[in-house]
Image (cartoon, rainbow, N blue to C red; front, side):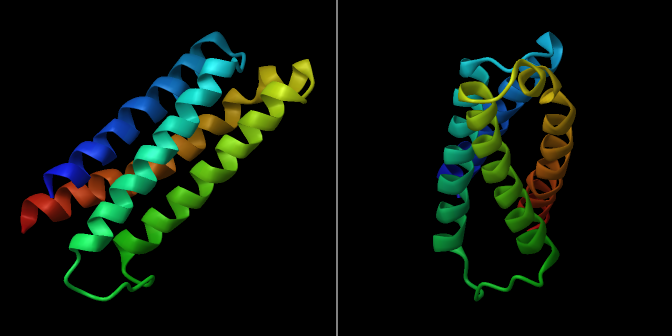
Length: 122
């Protein structure tokens, strides 16, 4: 349980760093993209660790599982898009990218805090 919590918290740190740094400067830089991918990798690792500890079968209809899956797919799409915008996108795409980052980050917080609540409530 501790490893999963540490991995997910590292995902929060790296993803938040990338989102907020990019939002403050309002311009997508390569290190922001690296932070998105690092956060995504920690999130996948933490999710996998939690899955291995689970005593119940995988059920996509459970709210925490559903919101977690949505968040993971959004993070993946966000990181892919950031990679494209950073390497091949126009200057306008790099400057306007920050508008969507905050949405993905806010969606990601739902399963993060939901999982924290579930973990603390037993």
